[in-house]
Image (cartoon, rainbow, N blue to C red; front, top):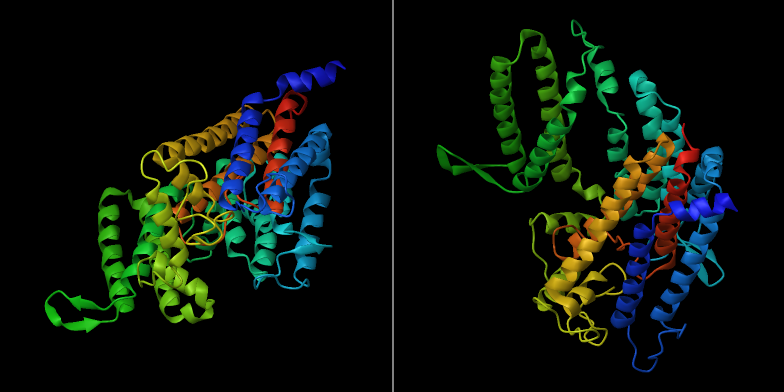
Amino acid sequence: MKREETLYKNLDWSLLIVLFLLLIMGVATVYSAAYNEKHPNLFDFSQKYGKQVLWVIFSCFLGFLVFLIDSSIYRKFAIPIYIFCILLLVIVLFMPSVNGAHAWLGIGNLGIQPAEFTKIGTAIALGSYLNKWNPKMQNSKTVIISNLILLVPMGLILLQPDAGTFVVFTSFLFVLYREGVTYDPLILSFVNLLPKVKFKETWIGTHFIPISFVLIVLSLTTLVLSRNLISLPFFPNVFISGVWGVIVFLFLLSLIFLWILRRISAKRERKKVNIIVLLGFILCCSLSITVNYGFESLASHQKERIELFLGLKEDPDGEDYNRNRAMAAVGSGALTGKGYKNASVASVEANHVPESETDFIFCPFAEEWGFVGSALLIALYLFLLLRIIFLAERQKSTFNRVYAYCTAMILFYHFAINIGMNIGFAPVIGIPLPFFSYGGSSLMSFTVMVFILLKLDSQRNDMLI
């Protein structure tokens, strides 16, 4: 009895209250977005809002059951749970496609997405592996195994294909970096294969994040510039392909970068600088060439979404219709909104915003409650994320901490990308808003994920390893 009292005493009530608040707001928004005058009852289970109520009740029930399980079970059965999730991803590939993807596992008239629950299985497996790992003993084997835990489900999800969930899985890379798993052992292994270049310093690992950031910016720049013709500065009437123009630009930029760093760096650092710049040059050039000459390998809608997001083409009434209508709905809410169930652009009757109860659930909410309501909703999500990070940092077990950070990053990706889709800051890739969007699989996985974290946190003093 004392043990149960301690668990509930240690339960993080602030996180639980925010979770329930988001679930209630989500049901209210789905009710407003999918409202049918002929079926005004919220508990009409023939309508989407009635089904959402059922999903919320069932998700909370699952969460309660999960909370009753001793937290040590997750560590003991981490690998079996992970393997079971992988098997589900394999099985779903042989199921009939739904909307062009083999992502649903049908059970009667119901269906679940195994990929949603694989996020939990992967987080548990990653926590179990890193729990036995010593950061001071990092080597190539550690990096490879950690990334294989992620790459196996990512590869199977890509085969479905489900680009949105694939992108979400990249969030685990930030968790690896937080735990000290960097790619410098692999880079060092590669570099040490080269003649007369041998070093063991952690210079590459120390500068990995800023260098990666610069390469990401340059790579995105190549995507935009290389899709256009570029005129030569001294020959305005001569045009060259943007691809080769970008390559020449990157080459000159690399030479300048090398000259500056060689002037300020010690002699023993010069070879490292050369290798980093060379790898960055190859990466950016490869991306530029791949996008231009390998673009046809992408599906037509994926290619168009990338081009639309980067501003390389305009199609407001075609492929870019959803995003444009979403931005119009959000903007029409103005400062204080039009009031609950008074949305016009994102309403069911207007049908200007497709999927307004799923991927674009933020649109009716923003139109009804305006900037003020949207800011409060974003503040709730930020509190949720910051609270999870706080819980992560107070854990005494590496397993608990890794799982908590995985939860935070998954929720952050969904939150940031979904709202980014609704306001034109991210491409449309079909990612639901946590605890808000209509749908059973995502709602159950998010809820169970948070309840597992609550359980781990409530028993944090029992898990000292």
